[in-house]
Amino acid sequence: MEALEVMNQHRTYRNFDEEYQLSEEELQKILRASRQAPSWMNGQMYSIIVVRDRGIREKMVEMNPGNPHMLHSSVFLVFVADLKRTQKVAEHYDVDYRINEGLDPLITAVTDTALALENAVIATEALGLGSVVVGSIRKDIVEVSKLLNLPDYVLPVAGLSIGKPNVEMKRKPRLHEEAVIHYDRYKDYDYSVIEDYDDTMERFAEARETKLWSKKFADYFGNTPNKKVDEFLKINKFFQS
Image (cartoon, rainbow, N blue to C red; front, side, top):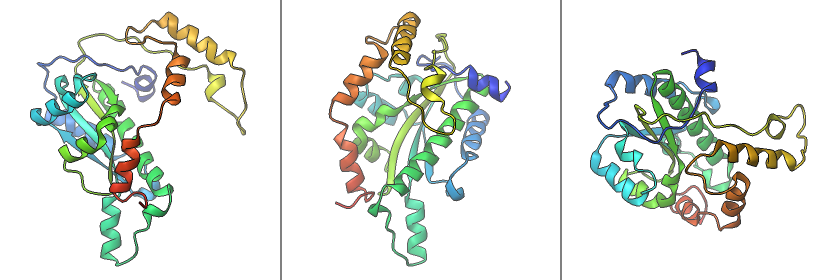
């Protein structure tokens, strides 16, 4: 498909044909597209873990039972922000590695990782397949990191289940342009724009949604953030203790 058509027709799939096996050629096409994503200074501060081992995937679903597709999809990828590579470079040149003194290195690595992840999503859909991004792997970030044998300076950002969908999904409506697109300067907008989107999503009636779109995020951000991530970042040398 044309690139613009692929992006404009994007939808998330959570149900996959368990009999379908992604070919090695298809996998490599997805990985090559992912690796061609832009990155800051061509730093490519990410890595991709291709999880084929069924035992590992079963353990990930045990920790995260709301996402059984991590086991039932054809392949599961984990995208990690990787500052280990640049730590090796610092050691080689015998210079200080001061990434724990500020947030910018982490933001850079997570951005690189997200760009690579999005390229993988687009490549998957261009091949006529489907995917779902799994940010909830961070819920058990320490356990997932140990399971995947991740070294320090490496942060799991999100997973990606890829396979052949066996349940058709509708394209989900997006927020009105007024709430998202700004020209030259950020421009505030009336709350009615959000209320209109609540109405749109209610009419869309996705079965897995049990709350208004706005209430879902009011509740989410009204709770204490996932402190496991904070502790993980300290233990793995992203921040000073």
